[in-house]
Image (tube, rainbow, N blue to C red; front, side, top):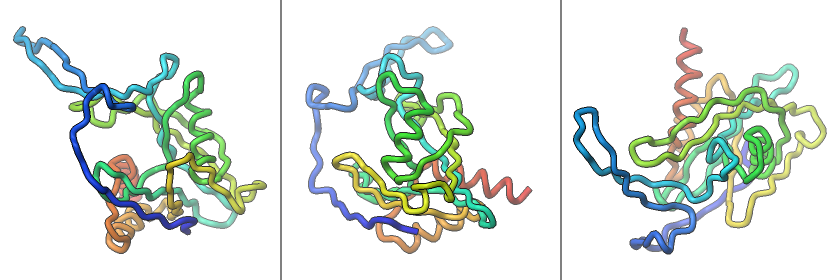
Length: 207
C-alpha cells in the first residue's frame, strides 16, 4: 500500500563550514590508545540532542494488526540528498526536548504515517556508525490496531519539507518485499536499520 509518491533531486554540492552548519558539527577528538600513544580522531555530532534526552532519535517498528490477517509493518520511502537516492526506512525522527522516547515514537508515527499506536518495547541506545559519530537512537516497537478509529484511513501530518511515501509490507516476508522494492522502484536503496531488522526476521523464520 502506498499513500504518496514523491520525487527529489540533488542540484549541487559544496563544502560547508561548521559556522554555517545548523544540524551537525565536526569535532576533533584527542584520545589515547591502549599503548599510551596519543592520537587524533575526527568525529561528527548532532547539534540537536536535548540535555534531557537519552538518545537523539527513535526508529519505529510498527506492527499493524487486524483480526484474521497476517501482521504487516510500515516502511517509508523518501529522498535523501546525501546519497542522492530514495531510501527505504522505518518511520523515525528526533526526540524533542522534554519528550520521552515513547512519546516521540508515538508522535513520529502519527506525523509520518497517520497511524496511532501503543508502545510495547524500547531498546537501549543504539549507535548508527560509531566510527564517525556519537549519533544514536532507540528502536521502538509499536502495536497498531487497524480496527481502531482513525487507523482505517490514516492521514499523515508530515513536517514542512518532509515528502514521505508510506508503504506497508507483510512482516513474515519483509526482506523479500524490500528486495523487490529495490529492484522495481527507481533509484531506491535501503537504510541499514531496516535491512538488519528484515534479516533478523528472515533468520528467525528459518530456524
